[in-house]
Image (cartoon, rainbow, N blue to C red):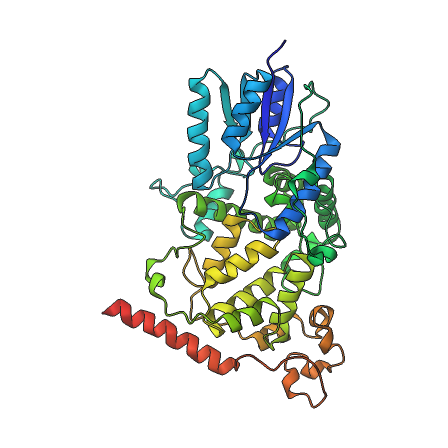
Length: 453
């Protein structure tokens, strides 16, 4: 019997432009397409997405599903099937790198052909560095360096066809028990189509209908002007390379593709900074005088702060598993500055509630808004949630969509409903904007003073 090759699915739940899968098929040997569920720390919204993504993947190719410790599962699979090779696409966070390095060496010692291939990135972290060979910490130079290396992106691989396989016992997707026990996710299905086909549909619809206005309209949450590809990219249902190569020929793609490189920047930051999800990149912020308050944090998570644009964003997150990027910046600023809650609390909430929860992007973005990360917005830049609402949702269309208590509030008061004489069940502001800003700046000054001691 010809010894099979195991292809190990990870964050690459697709058939198209899949380097390791294509290489496994190219051996001409039977391929076992294996997914191992070994992620106890995955957030609830991501689990919902994974369930449906795996169902779509299993319908498109012969997928074997197992659960447990990845190394133990792979070793057992090799013993059961006589597989002589294991191929996978790389992940770039330090924990995955350490695991994969260890496992590759262990397999090769046993005579197993263990190979890893370029993961779901345009550029691997060691391909884009400063002239001194160090990692970038500022986005604009990183972006320019990426543009200078476009030849490294390469052509997308053709979608795979049918391939030889062997029958292996498999769990069902439902056996993984990924769906939430409460009906929290009931709004997700109306918004999302997980899977490779859904990813391509969203990309093509965006290019055809929204990309030309992206640069101007992307900051307005009531307008469908963004691609919403982030969960598809996180789960690898479409490759960064396919997105780039499909969008790049269009003259109006520059602003959109810049955001794709921002995603790459986050991946590179995590690769070189293992503690990115919990420890500020700027060490001085380790001593920031936060004022943890469970009551205020709860009001923020549930969209009950009294600031309409903040609450609309938090309720959009709860209802759809996603939040518009401009609003993410507004709600993040409000949490860490007006409320003085640690950014790690916001990072944890987003991790559990976002369908696109990505450890690199989530961590880097929270550190950016908290002023403590790479190329971060200065902490003293405090968004005014009233003015932000007036500027980016002037008629309150987005607010009324997600905060139904405010549907009857006149346009003139939609961003300051506490000044309206009508009655509403909507709460009063949890903190006065001027007071919150003053307190945030005082906390930052205290940090600076401690630096000078």
